[in-house]
Image 1 (cartoon, rainbow, N blue to C red):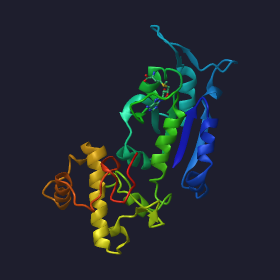
Image 2 (cartoon, rainbow, N blue to C red):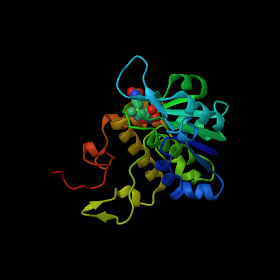
Image 3 (tube, rainbow, N blue to C red):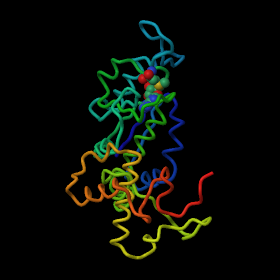
Length: 261
Ligand code: SAM
């Protein structure tokens, strides 16, 4: 996949693209990237990219001309072009999977009060919000989108890791533990060290349901209550046994934990 990110501050993005898993994906040829400085497409010698908003109001807006030229050069709108904006569609895993199927992605970062609507109308294919809050600029949001997308490209990380993550099954991920088995008087839930794979799988599924029910109940609406998963969900709703998983709010996930102060 080739990713082009257009920004007034491309240096914010450089560190992200040249470290860790992204660095390896680039080295393996799975991802290539280009960071475009929108100011390079400004007309005047001051490289001005913002102006006052028609109709009045506080703040400045990104001007259409530099954006239009930069997006034209990047291949928009023929290539999938995402403008990250709080007034876009809420980003989720399904969108990330959809974007991951593209060979090219162009991502536009806003600043100030955002960008001139005519650019959205003519060059942008997707307006994407990463959450119901307002950031000061689009670079962090662009990194969120890129990060969720590129790890889904085959070969970037193992398929097994992806399969068990939150949202891949429609549920939040179950709690996980590593060595030591006892830490600060807290024990790993017994079933996880039992070697009983069927019992472990059941515990994990139930723990996922407990967590999803507590934090994101709306994700459970599509579960068929007559299915095995539906039966487990009913058990969770009716209240688990002593060794059943629980959320942090209800005193932990099943591991022994000291009382909270
Ligand atoms: N005036 C805009 C509004 O109320 O919708 C907010 C502009 S914000 C201060 C500046 C830029 O940050 C936006 O153009 C966008 O690129 C980025 N941004 C801020 N919050 C975001 C969010 N939740 N998701 C995606 N991008 C965001």
